[in-house]
Image (tube, rainbow, N blue to C red; front, side, top):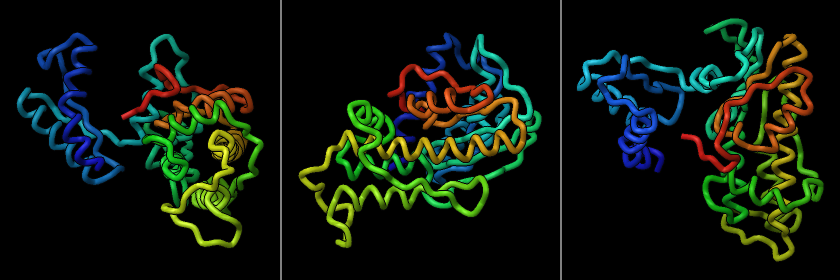
Length: 266
């Protein structure tokens, strides 16, 4: 599905970007393309499109690391403070959840990562079982605005690795809570119980994800005496996460600007 969506959208997205910047191919110095990590099919579409574009326009081709690209989005924000080192970067997206120590430009140390589902993946899966539209992140955030974040006490996993994450247990806890009585086997096809308040579940689930991300990020920032925390990736569009990070961390938190909390990043 992702590969087909890339094929359908990539030419349109590139043209819109050129139109928005009021430039043509003759104004470009190079073509940059995400080379990984990510879904192989999606990467294949992007890399081959970029190769063709670079060859046709006679431009050099630059491969960009997906996660590094998320981090450097912060250097593209006009009229914003430039990040200071050392910095702890929390990269949260549909496929990745990682904590990275950045001591200088292009100097990285991975501190932790998800051991199972990424944060964005957990949002998508829980959104699906709640009957919310895809992608799950914006849909759950919208539903959570009308809910009580304390209605359910969903678990916040703390794996043995000091800065690792785990979201599969949280996803399972939500599934069991909303679909059946304790001890009964459940599946994605099981219908929601009639008494389930979707807004309360969405708010409680979102709060558990935010707490898990916040606890580990705060610990890493203290341990490595970070000057900044960099919150990047598609899930950084979540307003509850942005506000919690900015209010509860002891160091400045820098976040790419989103047009709205419902913006769906590429």
